[in-house]
Image (cartoon, rainbow, N blue to C red; front, side, top):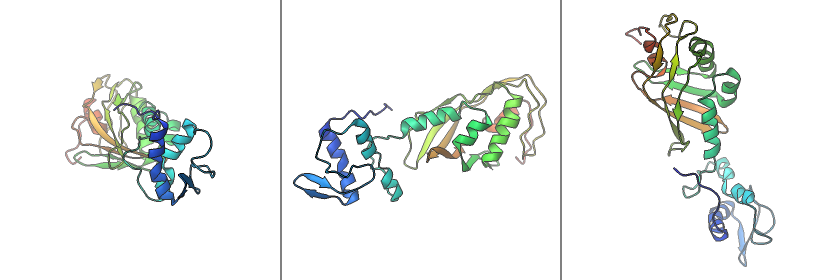
Length: 232
């Protein structure tokens, strides 16, 4: 999907503002609107010089609607898309504790849907990745792809295909019944998997790993020669 830039003409901008006036109960007199609302100056909207691009973006951001429990109108551009793209790119290319602590919400839930689904909280996920996966596989990569577009439920679709070379420590998946796998020297490319990621308030709130055989931590364990218990 192409990036939408705020380059519409003044008439279009005026049209886009109309929901703001309605939502804010502004009064109209002789073609001008008066009143106060988030992101708008207190002087008459129709007076003065043409507003700057940053002012228009602020008006169209509709953050105050979220505070009212209302959704952004579908006809408006997605002004948060670029920030989500940057955040998702950072998350799927960073394997250090400090960055993961920053990007993950304290209440994040990360669900790996396998024959026996497992949900990780923030500390569990960071522990598995930084203290077990990366020390075992120093060149571990997610190899992700996403355009950061949100679906109607607020999730971004991310495709990942993990790769690496098991040259470090033995691999153990904590909190599971799987025995550790000694350093195998194996190179691997897991199956491509789909993740649904919810980004809100500047952090990742939820990650759902869709069931894919040969992907996720279970697929990684098997790719390195580990045997997954039948009950798992």
